[in-house]
Image (cartoon, rainbow, N blue to C red):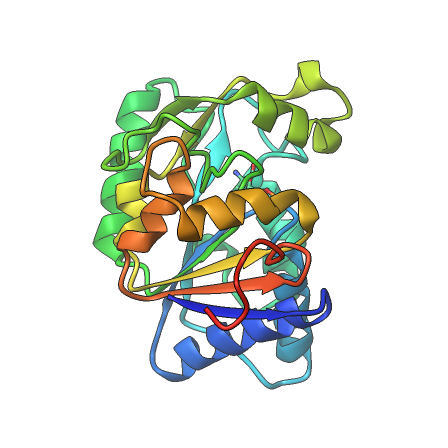
Length: 242
Ligand code: GLP
């Protein structure tokens, strides 16, 4: 595991360097996270594409997760969020951006379909954020570390954290579809982007604590190629140079 840390402005550029390096090395299948953590990365990718320094032509992308039950086209559905945050600003074909369908009538069948699609595609580089409670994707504390894509009930902490996107706690869906820890670990390389003091405890537990369902992100310790990019506030609990 490699830890790169720096000021808030450096996180996006450091993560973009990894994406650019992967593309140059032939990566064509990306795993994308939503939420605020990867936004500096996505802004930097958009800048590089606009400057002609980078191209996503021929690439496809797979989302980690999706809310269940939001009306079609809802602004907070992750399919819409990733369009606004990244796809609209780069040369990634929208038809090549995939996610679980949170409006499917048979959610278990949809989870199975999506798992097969992600595994079949083979993600070269997976972008990840981490929740305050140590979740990755929407794998909440207590999630079996060998779980694959499935329906999950959100922790109250996560619903409160994400209420800022919905205007009220009541509007936040209670269930989601998410890739499982085992799905995520199949990607060739994982890039975890973490910013802010609120994430410091979760990041410290994930990287230096036991591998445990209490902190699903701790499963990253089992992957041979993880790069963690954290700003100084998020990395405050980690020993420098580790
Ligand atoms: C969200 C997403 C995750 C994300 C995490 C952290 O709810 N499901 O994929 O990494 O929780 O969110 P944020 O980056 O907004 O803090």
